[in-house]
Amino acid sequence: MAKGPEKNTKNKALHTKLLNRKKARVQEEKKERAMRLKALVAKMNEKKNNDEGVI
Image (cartoon, rainbow, N blue to C red; front, side, top):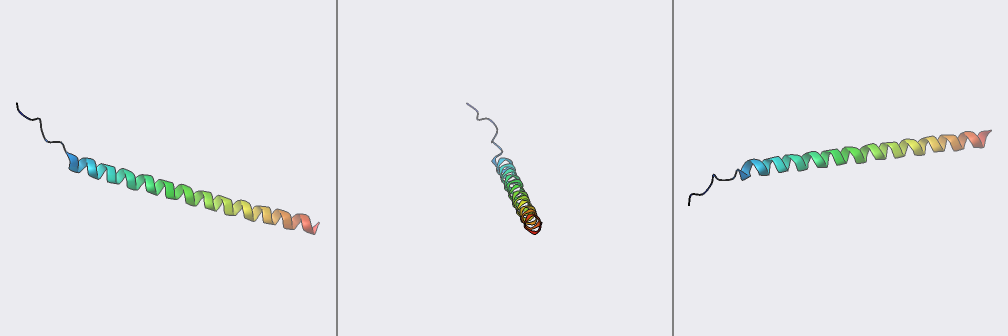
């Protein structure tokens, strides 16, 4: 019996590596965005509290 063609594991490995890199980058961007939003909300709450204390 003849074997089928060899599987192309090199391209699969590169593809997986690229996908993992993309997933990590997207997750990092999402985390940074959340931290910026959290900082902005904290800043606005601080400003709001200061304004209420003055009046």
